[in-house]
Length: 462
View (cartoon, rainbow, N blue to C red):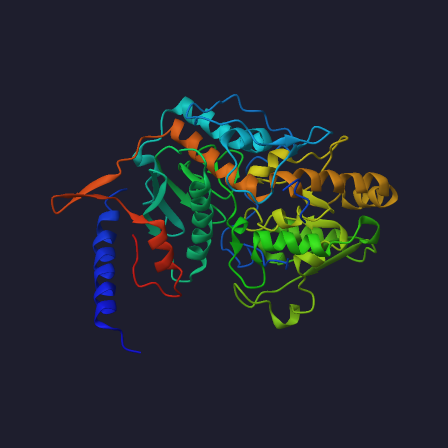
């Protein structure tokens, strides 16, 4: 269909604007949630040439030190509209994105531990400079952006041709934009860079950026929420809120769940998965099978019958979780089931890992050796002691599904990240001169999202 003259004119104007901008951008190096979706292919199912068993310190589970950092950039807060249940638990709407700073801090403050660690580290090293967040070292999966007067602007985007990294980046930026737009208080102006890759810095060269995961000694890395909290980029999965609601509607009671350890995934991503298969082979208490992938979005024909939705994962009392290329984005979905997540000692950190408790009355996860050598002992004990096992599952649901992995918690985390980063970073220069006139740097996110949501965007921000 031919475009009308006016439409054609607008297309030309917008295209010219972006083409001009692409050159300039490169110059700037009600009630408590009790919510419980199809099983996502892992964020790591495509093989990597890089080894995954890297020689870095293993995270100390459940024992992360409480950071002493207290952000100085604080909004003026109004009286909290939260209430408390008779048992002292905070009541909040799990899908309410407009919680005040005061409400967020009261409900989710413990989730911020790694943010405050990063800020403590940066205070000792000195403020973040524009050069610190330069993305020249990354080939792809990088975004440089600015928040100015409560709006998100994209300054630089480095995407490959597959569409894999751009869909991830868009999901991350959509989350961030929602948290900014929903904020009931003014947020500071900042400039930052982020990586949408499973491994933010392959060389562990101590670059300063926001990332999905980090190893213990990647102290310059600031953890941000996983892209899956917006939506997994596959029709098979859907939006995060959708998945939680589907689990709530379908999850059986503990007594009706299958008393087995369940896992599906691509073995070749990490040696720990081979260990898992070895230690569960032939065991009556295990249902562990590999799922093969034809490409990034489709299960192979031979695996069609074994691939399992997240909803059906929740039918099992025990759910195995392993790292993949680095972390595995599946973990947050498993923690939305009122089941026991069994995980090996991990190397890659996510924001909620500080809340994992592997022993004691508040235990909410089972941690085994990286080679799963003690898995049988752990499983036999839990199968014999169903009362203890059910308590661990209930602790997990109360901690993660009902609180720290809620959409409300993720929005609060984004805003805390913005505030804390502002305390230890430079004030961005929002304006540039073009043809003698001042113009805001970058592309408004709303415009950026429209362009890059198309299958093959014609405008590249580099």
